Image 1 (spheres, chains in turn yellow, green):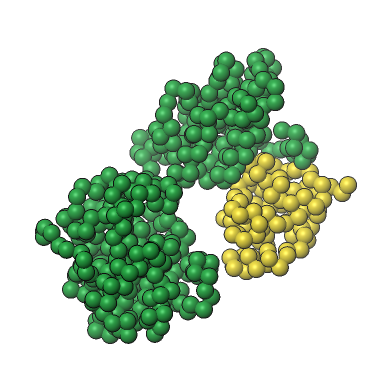
Image 2 (tube, chains in turn blue, orange):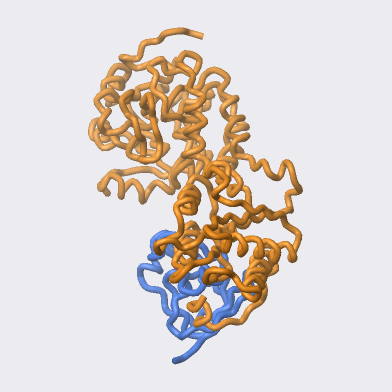
Length: 95
Length: 423
């Protein structure tokens, strides 16, 4: 199975994950500063800044796009509850 | 001040402001979490300007008859130019649809954040509204309403409205309390101090940071009277209540110790001393990191409320529980269920415990801590029965790990996801 390295810049932790893992599946287990609310792309609480590797993340769904737009999120932002890691990426909490 | 002022009809608050709310003296439990031993009031107000009338907030649907009767005694529906909802919770928005049906010419003003809630609460997307934020104004001719965006007091939508020429602050639930007395004014009603404090501690306390933000907007205002949506209208020494909110919302621990000194609290409860020995070893490991204070508390020897006070101002919380019948024990859940009274979001947290055969408690406690949006940087520590010397060293290392994280020096790690699952 393809692997990817997801790095949480705020705590200096890198986790090797199977490609296709959602950020939410990892971030809480290492104590990263990304905070979750609804966990289903509605509230925007888990807004995350992608420092590098945006091209290695899954495309946002229409629902995620709508929530990102509602929160006036920049082009380097994603929702951690929705985003799949397909290749190496470095992220940190947006807020 | 005046003694007995009847409230069968509307009540004059100032020359231009009338109370047109509703009394609900039989209410005994509010919003599931609040006891209301003498009921509550839903305060709504009518403001008269030279160029129209404004209605500030409405009431719970079940008490709408009182609201409309009082409104009709002081104004015609055709005069209503402005309707303001400072907070959309149903006890204040319950009469809105009917009010807008009777006064279709009126413009509804709500906060930015209230827009989606309005649709979800009223299931009516046809209601037109104008979103407003801090320092937006609406003129009633010789009277002016100014809006203050004061979110999370206690919903995302909450705002206050200031009647500039009268110095009246329509504060929504801020400065309110569940206390029903038809005398209405704080210098005429009975002793409501308990209700005021109780309301703050159950409604506003989790949002202290937002209270302090709102006070920055409110304190500079000339305040002659505070008109909240529940309980007495505060016309006598209104600034006293503003000062009390600041006092209640200001962290106290840092008045006693250096602001930069962090605090870790380790709570545990132990059947045979095993979880206690784990707690002590974790404490020792954390102490090696240094630079922060550590308190160790046996839940068996204390009450929940003072522990919650400690947690509120602590930076890291570790919770140790044995597993009994596949669960953490009740004193642990009593503590954890009380965290909803305060804001624990972002605090560092962890769980540990000794167990006999299956050890579910640690995972369950961890899930609760994460559910409260606390940061759990290391997988919880579970030890079967009596900790060995090696296992106690694992406890010390766990303490070092959490301590380093707390001090902003998390151990840089490169780990495989399978290790996380195995934790």
